[in-house]
Length: 116
Image (tube, rainbow, N blue to C red):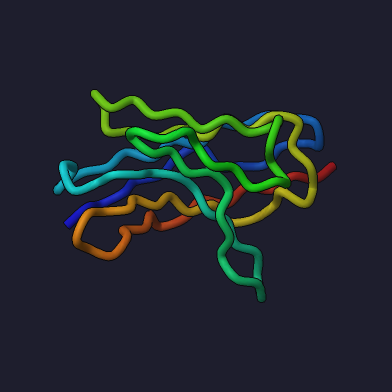
């Protein structure tokens, strides 16, 4: 089992910045990728950014150039630095850990609200 604990959500004005963090506990060795999805009410959960151990990160087109994903392998942590936030970035952000020979693990979600 892998448990993911997120932090860093909140409210910010358009143009502002936030950093999300997600720490993984448990079967760390089974994780081959970590990242972030987001979801707004009534819509499906969609990929924001994904960091692989051996490949270049993947970003949604809507966040390229504004969001940066990074990982601290020693701390089993993935970060999402979000710059120049827009109202359309408002969503619940979920951390994901993709695992070998198992389904993904999800965090509990953290709310990000961008409004003036």
